[in-house]
Every structure is written in structure tokens, then in C-alpha cells.
Length: 334
Image (tube, rainbow, N blue to C red; front, side, top):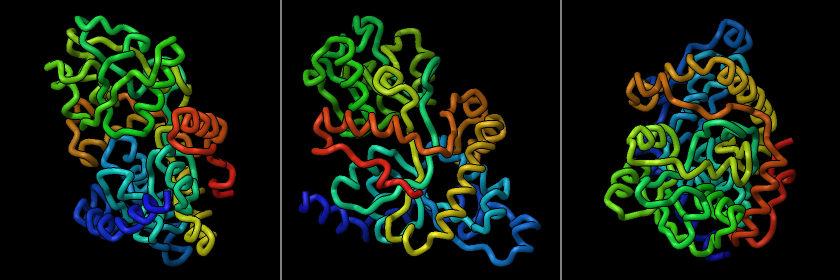
């Protein structure tokens, strides 16, 4: 475990360089700007405090851009500069070393990092999967394969974007609930854009896909939905949270408080105005406007879902992701 932590921290310098290469500044405005002019109220209150926020180039991250454009962060005294990364592996050490002040990412990755010794603090919730109805990610298979339920995944190969994350964890638990042996499911890593083609070629038996990839795959009548693993394993499972380092939280309590309040206001407004949020996607991540307009979005909510995160921690122990249950209360900013 110590060796793994040392490697993670050693990678932080590389991560900082990688993040610089991936892009800095707002995704839809010139680098170094906050994405919107400060509101009159904010300008009257004095200078804004600049903070860097790491986001993944995925659809739910657009909610942060929405908060910037609406002037919400400026109203709370903050000038936000977005930095984009390709994955959580770069985000965590960047936040830990101060390259980023805050980041938005998968809660499981944050909990794993804390288990390995990184001092991370969850600041707010961010996005949650749907507790019922059509969810934001699901497992699909070719109809001719005969895979119709999670129980049928026993002995099969399933594609996920990264091993030891929410995809394989929730699929294993869903299979177990259906009476299958989750240990007999083989998981392989694969980028989301490649999964549908590999499924059609028979390279994998099933694939775990988020939107918009899920909708595209199901539009092909040869494919069928196996099920929604988040709903089966942990209904309402958070897909992302915002977080910072324990050191930054301790030394900048006022900034963290302002960020928390701004993020909660942003997410509440984003949930109330989904069409306005979707309208930013074409520019935010070069998404086709027609696809963006119909995209099924996660539920935005700034409240930290402590109970669900605790249940997630129990599953992490059950499937040997960690050796002890994460203390969600301790790792959350009060």
C-alpha cells in the first residue's frame, strides 16, 4: 500500500504537465478567464478570488460551466478557471499537491485515494444516477447472445472503461443479487467509444455504457439492455462529487465555504433548468447539437449523499477494493 501511494504521489508532477496539455481555462472561453464577467454585486464586493477546478470532459461537467456563465461563482466571490483532464488518476494527485484547488470526479476514486493515504475532502455532491426509470448508464448485449439479465453475465466478458471503479463494482453486485457468481465475470478495460464495435465483433459479451453511448447502442435493434447496475446495486448512486485536499480545506476555510455554497446553488439551478444546461454541451465538448438536446442527464444535487456513499463503501469492502470501510463523515467538509 505504501509503495502504491508513493507511485501515486510521484505521478503528480507528470499529472500536472498532462493537465496543462489537456487544456486550461474555461472549456468555452479563452484560457485564464472565468467564463463570464463578474456580476455587479460581485464587482461591488471587491476582487474575486481565483480558484482552479478540475473537470473531466464529459457531459455532467457542463454544470460547472453553467454556474460560471450564470455568474453564480462570481456572486460568491470566486473566479473559476477550469482545467480539463482525461481521468481521475490525474485529478487526485493534482488536487493533493495543490496544482488544482478543487476537482469534480467519481466518489469511489476519492474514497480509494483516502484509503491509500491521500488526504482528500468531499466538498459537495454533484451528480447522481437515477433511482428509478431510465438510468444514465447501463449494460448492453447483442440480442442473439442470449444475455438477458445480470445472472447471464456469469462466465462472460464485460467491457468497462476502467477496472476497479463503479462499473465493475455495481455489475458484480447486480449479478450477485440475481444469483450469479460475480467472481466468474471477466472484466476488460476499453474506451467507451470502442465498446459498441467490439460488442458487434464478439470481442466482448456485454458492455457498460453511459450516455450518450448507451442511447446510441440501443438505437441499433441488434442490441438489448441487460439492466441498469447502479439502480440494482445502489439506487441513486452518485456518479460524481466535488472534492479538495485536506490541506487546502484547512488553510482556506473561507474559500472552501464560498465554493461549497456556489456549487450547491449552481447544481440546484442546473437541475431546475436542464435545457439551458444541455444548450452548453455543443460548445463545451463539441457534442452534436441534436444529440445534446435529447441527452439524458444525471440528477444534479449539491448535497453529499452520505448514506449511499456509506453503502458504496460497504460494497468496496465486500469486493476487496479496500480493506476497511471508508469513513464518509470524516472525509466530508463540514
